[in-house]
Structure formats: structure tokens, C-alpha cells
Amino acid sequence: MTYKGHFRIWRGDEEGGSLEDFEVEVNEGEVVLDIIHRLQATQAPDLAVRWNCKAGKCGSCSAEVNGRPRLLCMTRMSIFSADEIITVTPMRAFSVIKDLVPDVSYNYTKAREVTSFTPPEGLGPGEYRMQQEDVERSQEFRKCIECFLCQDTCHVVRDHEENKSAFAGPRFLMRAAELEMHPLDAADRRDDAQDEHGLGMCNITKCCTEVCPEGIKITDNALIPMKERVAGRRYDPVVWLGNKLFKR
Ligand code: SF4
Ligand code: F3S
Ligand code: FES
Image (cartoon, rainbow, N blue to C red):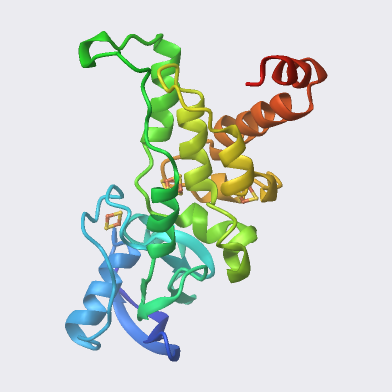
């Protein structure tokens, strides 16, 4: 089936912008990114959009479709009705470079603030041994394609630019949790997670988990276990006494 679809696309830059209406041909089997490409080819050659793989694996084409954070290349046109107006806007939690292209540098800043993998001293490459369940836990987190849809969704920063300096966001709290639970990571990440990366600002609403295109259980498998570890360390009287006695 081929039809004329109604699209409302945000055009502009960091100075400001507005929604523009377009009518674009839609064919069976297409995704929203196909429509954006057709729009570029036929009506708006200067429309900016970031993409690379068109296979849901590079994490570049993140945007909001009818207000919901999504990958443009994995959003099928068949989920919308033919007479619906489809609004495509850039991710709201970040400033805009041009049109649908956001400035995601906040995420790279936060990535650099997480201490890298720290194996025990003296352990050489070939000497790493892990239980299968530890491997599987890491593998779930390693599916992340860094699309930053979870970062865009989390209410702590979505409309609160002022929280960004204190909050790393679900993607990077998950990274801290992954390394904290890694049997070969010797760094203690609990104080950093709480004091530097803002773990306490997460109130486990799970919106990040809902939008993750990789289906990673960010809240249940990373953020909540990390909160439990921080709480155990800080508020368990036995742990507290041990810390006092042995000055850990
Ligand atoms: Fe994207 Fe999921 Fe990674 Fe967040 S955790 S950046 S939503 S793939
Ligand atoms: Fe935000 Fe996810 Fe926590 S949406 S509040 S990081 S559970
Ligand atoms: Fe790579 Fe959409 S273009 S995830």
C-alpha cells in the first residue's frame, strides 16, 4: 500500500526553530527514517538527521516520534494509521545542533567521569577467569548501543538542565553498576556512584528501561542492585562498624 503521509518535522538550530508540515509518500514496509530520507531527496535537501546503520545497531538515529523517544530506523510506519499526523522532533533533553541532530556531548562528558575497568594488580591478560553468570550479567549491559534514549527519557534531566552536572543518567549509572558487580574489577564504585554520579536522584521510575531498544533491564538489573550495594555499605550497622574498625 502506498499513501501520502502527513509529517510535522522540527526545523531549526540552537537559536530556535519550529515545526514544519510535509506530505511525503509512504510505502509498505518502510520505517520513519525512510520517510526522512525521502523528504531530503524530494523536498528538504538541507534537513539534518544523524544516522549510520539503518539496522538499530549504531545508536545514531535517536529522536522523538509523537513525543516518544525512539530509533527512527526501527520505528515502522505500520504502527501509525495513514491519516495520522506524525511529529518528529529531536531528543528533548539535549540542545540541538540542527533540525533532528542533537548535541549529545553531555553523555561523553559523563562517560569520561566513570573510572575505567580496574583489574587487580598483577593479573595478566590470559589469567582472567569468570563464572558464566558474571559473564552473562556483563553481556546484558554490553548490548548498549549508546543511543542515549534512556538519557533523554529520564525525568531527572529531561526538563532539568540544572541537574546535569550532578547526574550521570541511567546509561552511565548502569556502567558504574556493571563494573561494581564485575568480579575482576578492583575499584570501589559505590561512593562515586552516590556522590559524583547522582545515583540517589534516581527514584526508579523505570522510564529508561521502557525506551531501551536493546531491552536492557537498566533499572532492575543495574540501578536497583547498585542502590542496594550503596545502602548496604552506608546504613548496615555491621558494615558501618566494620568500616570504622578496619577503616575501609
Ligand atoms: Fe540506548 Fe539502552 Fe544503551 Fe540507554 S541503555 S543508551 S536506551 S541502548
Ligand atoms: Fe531515571 Fe531510570 Fe531512574 S528513568 S529516575 S534513571 S529508573
Ligand atoms: Fe543506526 Fe538507527 S541508523 S540505530
